[in-house]
Amino acid sequence: MQKKRLTSPDRPTPLMDVNDDGFITWGDWFEQMAKEKNIPFIEADQTPEQIFRIISHK
Image (cartoon, rainbow, N blue to C red; front, side, top):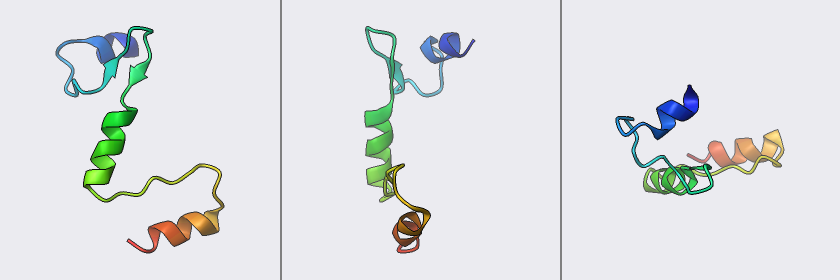
């Protein structure tokens, strides 16, 4: 059901697309939107203290 919804031409977010191998390729779109809104990306290997320092400066 999810794959059908994601590949539908009527989907509300056409920038979220699937490449030739069937992988959903929304990372570039998502990263660009975050940069435009000045939202930092947080690496998953950071400690809670490191993450808090990043988000508390916003």
